[in-house]
Image 1 (tube, one colour):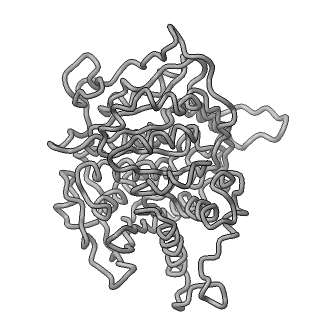
Image 2 (cartoon, helix red, strand yellow; image 1 turned 45 degrees about the horizontal axis):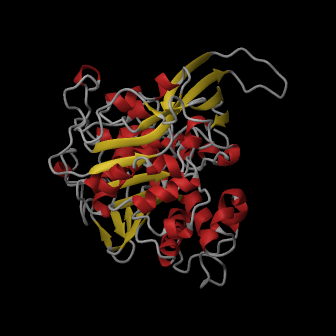
Image 3 (cartoon, helix red, strand yellow; image 1 turned 90 degrees about the vertical axis):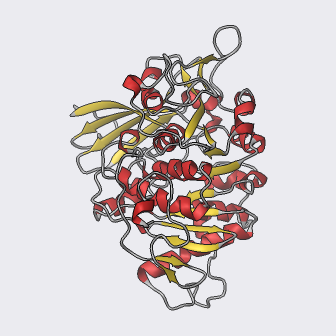
Length: 456
């Protein structure tokens, strides 16, 4: 895909992809992409809510507070629940986008003013928020989705996998207007064009979030992304009393104070540099979404090196890792309690009070890298809610992300607890010290099958 898949698809082309691709999420501005330019929330809030002035709730899914997968008329179809919450685990609440991806395949992309006959079309559920909720639920977390769909025909296509995966959708509101939609055209050469209509997602602002303050305050982990209005992101982060997992993708204008509430802040390489440019003063956070590559190029990562490069003599992949580690370290120095930087097939870099760590990713034969980043985030949230450390959670998340690229689509490719995750054969590194064998520093220990192998 064009510039869309700079890291994710590049790794996929090598047949070895890990956790870091962007979510293929409709609404990111780049469906199935790594960096994903954000859509403009300035498009405005969707019109007045329906009915008596209060939004309607979308049907399906257990009610808030009811255990996902419990017997009820809203239980998943045929009771098919990919994972069952482990006893004593906390709740994951995802506040974010819900979209439908209309994917049209064509031999080549049309030129301006040209009409071509397509070769196929499919409607798929998407949106970073929905993707991450599905991923968390399938990894065994009790998961609640807070978001909105429209009152149009596309709403029915946006939520079925949320419900089937056991996500509580009782907090998904129905508002007047269209459901979030991404119209994607894909040529035989994998080039693509994407037009995103935020639709109902633009209604998930401060007031909408406030209506769900109770569930946010009781959550073990609140998961947020950049595909809803900034005031919704900010209010949700401030309401949370548990951990805030902020996946600022795309990078949008939020208060720096809110960025510092993230524990962890999850970004890919491009997003990390873009946000750092804002925090370093070369741009305000409010301007970050408008800067693109200009912001990235303004960040000086190696101020102690006279040549502007790493001082340890590394090159190639080591140099790229050192540069990414420098971004993570700089973000921590700006007051962020913990940072996870996803790096596609190269795994992830994790930094918190325990130090700076590189987490290796499994090497797999990639089929479709879209949605891998959201699989990573959902799995990370699920393990954190179960009481894992951030490093333990990241070890499992890279495996879940890698698993997801071995199947087609986003949400359908996410593993349940009964699915065998790929193993990591390479050595993880403690970037503050010596290399560690895979799994050292905390391998996943849930019933996910990874603990038995003692691997990342």
